[in-house]
Length: 308
Image: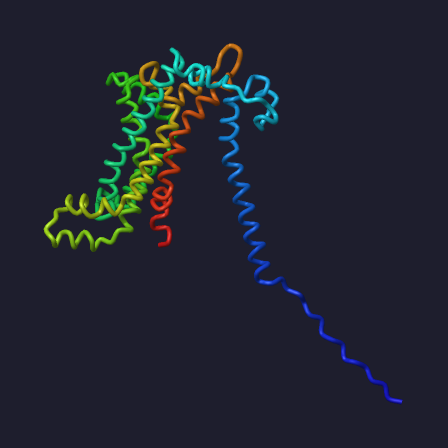
């Protein structure tokens, strides 16, 4: 008697659909971005909320206003910037205004001067070939960038002696010169990449039309490099605005900046966290506003040449 066996059916492996893979990938990417945004923004949130806390709320680590603690203007009142003191006379507010003005003058002045000098140096390194001993263009650029390796404390004593001899201690002009030297390598690096992305044929066409080197630089190249200039200026502005070491070393009363004032919010009873937080909030607010309005220039300027 014959028997028949049925052939076994092949086992099919179930693979996730392509749309499921894409969805999972997006969830992971956006989850990582949200986590990183939280890590980056939490210190700012903590600083802003601390400016509205009392001493008890600070020590107990209360985080959520109106839920963990009741907001108060104590930090802003100590600076004369609360609603009930803003129209009155306040020594603290006058000092804050003076330090704020010093920060604006020194940061903007140094950033503009560094942008002018750095753009000229970067254009030369981009369009011409130099030979200084064994150094070529790339070596000269590396020499500028190597200045960032030196820790500020190494330059403390030389600058202190030099500024004392030149009567530049506690002056805005002295800080502007020093900050210009500090951010100049970064400006040269950014602007050289920006100029390298502009075809040299545009310069040659300008020469054919009768323009000089200066004319081609000012009328042709500079207008095309506005994104890079904006990025270099903003980055320089941020670095100068936040600089503390030399501002504390080379100033005493007249030219003190905001970072020095923020660091001085200590007393015999300890650190006035609410006052320091209010000062820090007022100090970072201008940079946040500038970054929001000029974000597209920053991104396009810093990513120039990234695809090469």
